[in-house]
Image (cartoon, rainbow, N blue to C red; front, side, top):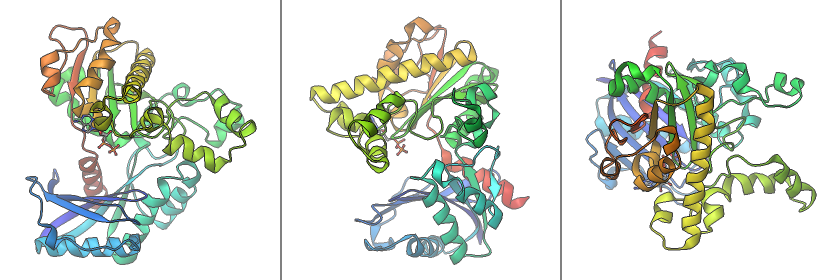
Length: 393
Ligand code: ADP
């Protein structure tokens, strides 16, 4: 029997999963996704070598399937698929851990109650993350479960970096800049020394550019400042989210245009960003392939905003030695990297065009002041390691 760790990342309409052998370090056995939950579920999975398992052995789900059906079926499928697997512990990506969790936590009833109280701070993600924990507990009550928070990595920040300039009573209540994408930043911080040696402890900015996008300024591989704030709306322009916005716009939408809180939530989280500006797509690859001027405008605004945020973050660490691009856009879009870096030449950032086109690991011009790297992120392995550590403790 192979003892295994299950990693789950559950969103509003998808369940991403990965299975690792519970070895130190954990080694990947399988990863997959069930997308389109509630509409048209599509299951996919592949092993560590990237081999796609034949679809005829995939579990079948209909559009009415909820997490309560999906999770037990997924567990059965994983164990049956290999025949020799027994899941020893499960780790979850949980968007919000609040002010105090600086690392992963073993799931208990008390922890669940604490995380439930944070739902208003992350209403689009936290309920799904917690529902997955509950469904798994219902179908496998003896399984150790570990919550790994997207906010934890940023808890090293000074108070100044976490404060908004609002009345102090509100800050004391918890209206603070929490920051997100911490599992991705944790992974990059952990691998950076393998690429740049002791320079990993210098002034580093990681640009996590995916459907959700943020940046993190690090010193000594710890978070000093980040572009996302109280919610995952702030900072960079994203696929569907607006990024930083004058709060006066929200007041205007309410007072002059009569929009409700629900309308504004949908406008800022779902209808803005690349989709809102282009009116074509929220997908960067689609926009890059389009000749429409609106597509170009959306890509240009994405890069303009990213360069501006990057320069602002550099101020928090007194300059920049290493820039890392990661996530779907950061890893795959040579055009976006070029546009962002061209705006930042004055900071000593110069790309090597051929290395950039090849998506090489080192894409900076040799001898330029700032090293520029492309490092694929891996949030699942961070969760698997934490789960193994916590479950063994
Ligand atoms: P998520 O935040 O959902 O995990 P990803 O990190 O997978 O998202 O990033 C998805 C984004 O990456 C999409 O906008 C997609 O178009 C973009 N992307 C992926 N491959 C490419 C590519 N070759 N060129 C440009 N953009 C790409």
